[in-house]
Structure formats: structure tokens, C-alpha cells
Image (cartoon, rainbow, N blue to C red):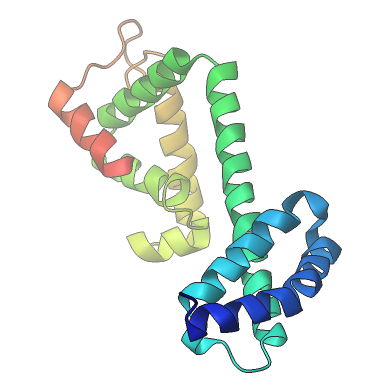
Length: 185
């Protein structure tokens, strides 16, 4: 038994399908047109009560939105594929080791040095903005940042932050490193 809704939808489909398809082809090419048109009419069926009497403009708007969403989804898929390629091209173990080394070196630094470094590196503040946070002049902050970076390089190289003794790398407690990694990741 054919209902009034089915009859209305069929008439709308027969009248508008080619024009919706042509619109999508003009925007995105033939490869995606069939899928976008199918999704457009599926939405029209689900929202049949919202479709105005003259349906073409409404359908073209829906097709435009479906097309936009499919482009966004494709961009997300491409970004994910690129990220996965980066992970597989490099050695993940090396990156993890470097990160752990950095976290250990940071944990070995005094709290003031960590704050100076983190404001710029993790929070993305400019030295001028970071200077406001710690309450000093921009020039003083830059000097502190330079010294903190130097101590970080020393700690990463296995030298104590004060430069007094070379040799073993600083070994902060594992819980301190774990807390830092949770805070800064």
C-alpha cells in the first residue's frame, strides 16, 4: 500500500534527483555524486515533514551540507593516515625514550626552572606573556629562560644542573616523573 508520504517522496525524487546530482557533480565530481545524492534523499525521507513544497532549494542545501561533511570526514581520514605514517616511519621506541629522558631532565630541575620552561614550551606563551605570569620584566624572563634551557641541556646530557659533577644522569624518583608526565601530556 502506497502512502501519501511515499507518493510525495517519489514525486520529489523523480523531479529533483537529476538536478541535485548535477549540483553535486559540479561541486565535487562524479565519484562522490551518487553517494551524496543518496544521503541527501535519505535525509529528505527522514525529515519529509520539513521539506517545503518547492523542494529543490532545500534539497540543494542538504546536498551542500552532506558534501561539506564528507569533505571534512575525508580530511580527518587523511590527517589520521598521515599521522599513522609518521608513527610507522619513525621508531616509536626512540620517541618514547626521548620523551622519558626529557621528563627525567625536567624533574631534576628546580621548580622555578620547570615553570619558566613550561610556560613557553607547553603553554605556548611568548616570553613577554610568561614574564607577566611570573612577575618579572621581559628581559629578566629571557635571562631566566636562557639559564633554564642551559640547565635542561645539562640535565639531558647527564650533567648535574649546577655543573659541579659530570657523570651519571640525574635520577628523580619514578613517581615524580610519572606526575610530570601526567601533568604535561
